[in-house]
Image (cartoon, rainbow, N blue to C red; front, top):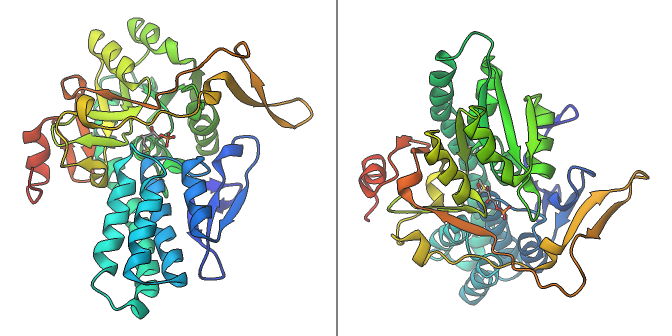
Length: 365
Ligand code: MRU
């Protein structure tokens, strides 16, 4: 995506050829800061503390973390150690483990002196593959938007509800749920995006709204509780969200609050789509509610809200009484039965074992 007149991926190799540069998302939309990750602890902190976030992007970041580790010590022991250190940073998004396994698959058979170069090459490929997956998801999702637009009066926008940030900032480029929106906008289809603020960390208010502004996509920020009301009043034509892990049965784990949007969508007969790159499918898990580990984050994310003062200082303010404990489950699971379709890079699948198997016949379920 462009920031000013420069095109940025969300992660890239530093000019030293060893470290990686990232956009530090903790400061958006107030400040656009780039930081360099030089060591494995830097990479682990960036993922754990959400300088980078979004399932595909944390996978790519971890892949570069393995590459950095291999320049220090390319032994089997160090490969195993870094795999565990990075895998422990965030538990829910499966792309993290997918990318770490992918690095191990490529590096393990190689003699240690060849591992660092191979690791940087594979990490760069994973990043490029992510861009291509999102573009394909965009094309398939665009068909859905075109279909809705065709039933509208000329000039009337397709109204889309999104949750969290499954955008450029959650991936390397384009985003998953945002890719169809960006392609529709490029094609001149009028869309209007209702952006859930997405408490507690406000990824919608801070990141998705910033992306929509940058792309010139008409949008309205709403509080998390407004979606059902808008649906009842015919103001939403479709919901599209991303996912951090989708099971072989089509259960969708995504940012907390997604399930409630899916329930409201079903009650109002509104299509609920999930943008799903295949590295986000966990083929080993069937029942999402019982089997997916849900990250429990620090309660301070609920009690404190970040914002910018009139003088430009970015601050955190407390919104609850001192001493009130806060619970903070970061994700929930939307059962497959509430999902209209999974928009993958290979086409749109039914959210069912048969639907996913038809598009990915090579995967043993
Ligand atoms: O906690 P985050 O910000 O890393 O969670 C990200 C999400 O839940 C996104 O909405 C999801 O789509 C995964 S990224 C495409």
